[in-house]
Length: 312
Image (cartoon, helix red, strand yellow):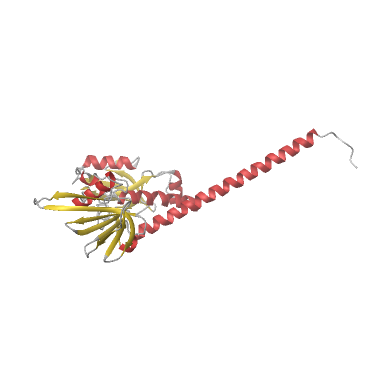
């Protein structure tokens, strides 16, 4: 029962994490032009679900005559966020259509469109109730600023470059100079950063109160950077705007998984490692047992082939 419960939790949280990154937070492996792509109006209700499998049915105690999909999360700020829905609820139907899978619900939402209503029949604790949701438009992704887009492009297309410079024209036709300096981080303080390029002397850049630091797509403090890791410093008109640590993505400020979610995902990762190690140990014991059985059978065969003799 505990193993099944952990499996359900793993499925739920992994899906939740993937969903949380969809509307406004770029995926870690997204292409450097992802923030520039067109965003068509996409209807959504912000409900994350999984199939009602036999193990999940058994863990949640769902009767055999109840079918549908299982609620595992609600996106903050979405239509589902304020609705009478909880994790482990079973959504049986939507607009009188029996739900067969999460994709089935997605199709119904798309067909209804923004502004339409979705009426869910929900099972919870041996009782059913209706939940009405108004379909909304999924929030548009935030566009990364020009300097960040150019920095990511520079790092991607010129990984061996020591530095570079481009002149950029903004929306008001003002010209700005973007300067890039990349290499291994030597030291960083609140006042300055020292970068060691692949060749040549180290470069010391003065920092300011507006300098921001990013690592793995998230904003961090200067102390979050480690000596020796590859960094890219971006200066605008002679002032250091940001320092990015590899791998270089298009991070968006203030859009990240909550500390609680990170902690839970870390717990799941540790559980997964423990289960993998336990599986290896079980396999090792099974091999040893099979070896013992094989040796025992060989001994029995040898005894059968031995010539009969009188007992002393």
